[in-house]
Length: 258
Image (tube, rainbow, N blue to C red; front, top):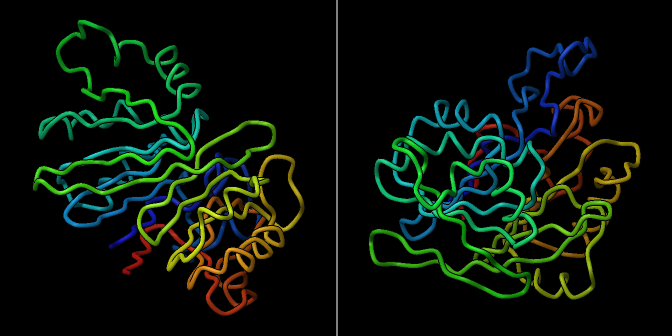
């Protein structure tokens, strides 16, 4: 399995427009954070997690134009779904199914109805919606005849219920503040946990760094990588040095091989 961090940043990205702090003006490329997204490749199947407004730029940087077999959507917020129309080039290969729970799927249909019309006009991305449920596993199928099982896991983004995902011995959690007890059970035995840590100070809808470290310790994955960072988290080089063993500050373009 290979996990590529396409974007490690929060909703405003880093640098944030108009900000001249030391992070936003840093020359370290690891401090340039596009909106949060990742690509998981396993058994020849490629799975995109979230498709935000930086998706086009992320794919140009990745420079690996091959089919995408499915897109996992964590929730409806624009920084996680604003790039869905940019899946259009990948539909030259085949349809790209979008997996989301009903609440999120309904809002995608309202927001970009032309993508889901019964009789779409030519050129519209072919991205059929597949409705999923927390705790109910499903499979994503590749052109090679293989399939990969995905387990949606409930977490809370403030008061909004959203999805985390487990694929094999890897899990991806973003925008979380709290997690039901049953969700911890679904995260046992991980080799890799990718999880959000927004900033040092507490936030009402995202984990702080200290909260993320507490949960990382409880989940006890072999390696944990922090994502969805704002400029308020600090410089990558400084944060990385402060972390305990087996916890890492991620950055755009990071490849994790399991």
